[in-house]
Length: 262
Ligand code: DGL
Image 1: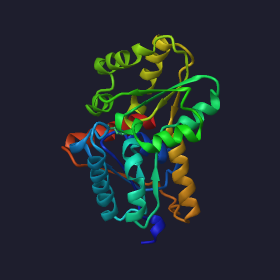
Image 2 (image 1 turned 120 degrees about the vertical axis):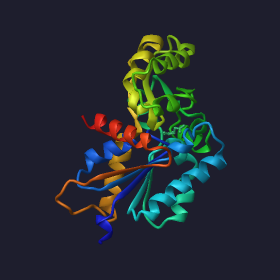
Image 3 (image 1 turned 30 degrees about the vertical axis):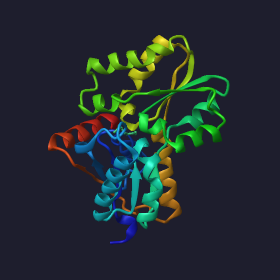
């Protein structure tokens, strides 16, 4: 089979990366995708760097063995720690995601921006570099949401614990008037309207949501085009889901994926 007809591999600690997958599928309907969620080891965001690196490389190995033409790290936490090691290990394009701080500060250069992400993402050198490159450290408020990915991972997006958790996390920022709110973890994309509503109510401001999945999906398409790896198939591509955990997780991935495409 020609390399361009091989599937694209996408992984995350669990269900979060399904948001990136769905966005990529919208942009690239003829591509085939393999999604791998490391549900047995989720969440990553509260683990050590070494643990996150080892787990992410195991996800990369799984996808590489499936014969993918590209690996997408659909996890902000894994990106910051693993992207370099993956680029050295595999001879295929590696695409990563990072919190969408850039579009947020471009749109609100004089406003305050809230960044919600895992503790691991917010403590990475890569994230500090991003803020300093954008000269954004002063206007950005970092909000660690260690348990939010786990709540989303349970699969019930209307679980009242999610809203209660958001209230608890945002209450210290009452009246801060955020121009933008960056969802810096792919799990949070599934609850971004709840995040926006709670942030508007407590913090005030327009609280416009900025999500890295859009830029990542565009980047996947650009790199495939540059590397002459775009599928030439006229047919709609399929999506295959795998989880390192129980089968129930695959059902959650499929449900989240279908809901996202609606
Ligand atoms: N979805 C991941 C991210 O984008 C990780 C969440 C977690 O496992 O803690 O950061």
